Image 1 (cartoon, one colour):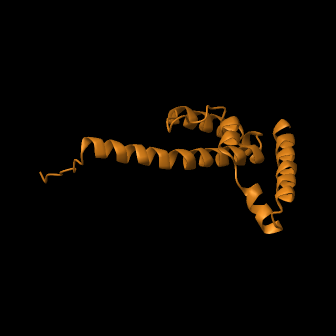
Image 2: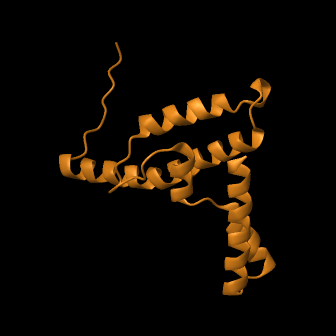
Image 3: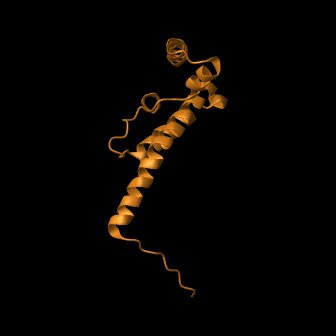
Length: 120
């Protein structure tokens, strides 16, 4: 029930923000479609990534547990399950570019080492 109240409050806040900034109706729709990283971390109950470092295993473990716990076939909520999926997607969108950048920097530092495959 608290999640529904939070979603309603969030929607009202976003409408007020859009009205205050003078965003059109179409722009207002795009504001409500996204999820902040902070909200995603609260939903999954994980710490936000610091300096591009995050415990991805913990995030995936929490995601799986919450997703399974909210399975509609087992009496869970489809709405909450959807929020959990969106939170994971948002977290991945934040971590993906940071992880790729770190991998490129590590490769640059160590030098490029091509993989060589031999036919046996």
